Image (cartoon, rainbow, N blue to C red):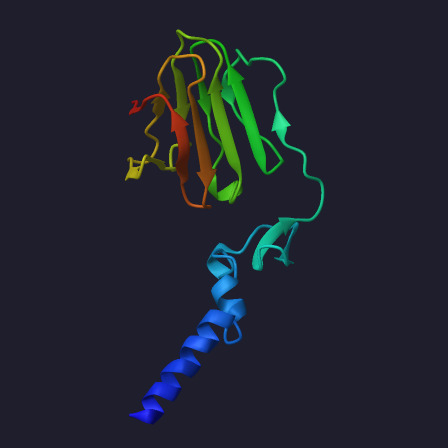
Length: 171
């Protein structure tokens, strides 16, 4: 009985003082090889929060349009994040998810009366609010100034990670 108490106290001591396996408990959740960050990131330790995290090491410029985009069409970018500000009803074609792994794009509606159609490539899938659609099926961001949809590519499909307004299945 005494040995069990001592062992229990030892285990609790190790857990609460972070002396045993502290790195494993505080490692970034995306440290595994399947989810390792793209080139340009390094693993850092924040001594204030006592946590490991990925930090971008390099040019940290977001690609953006400074004025609303009314042309639609194919969307391409070479930065980590891209924002498209839209003030007219139009359709945008996403690039292949496999070529944009870990990159994000945000479509932001600047006008109150326009729907935004977002088309994946024919072979790509969009996961709309947790629901995987068929390959090539469009999503539609509802009209309303300030509505947006934030998409992330995991290398296989585009996934909605945030939104304001309704996102419906298109054609």
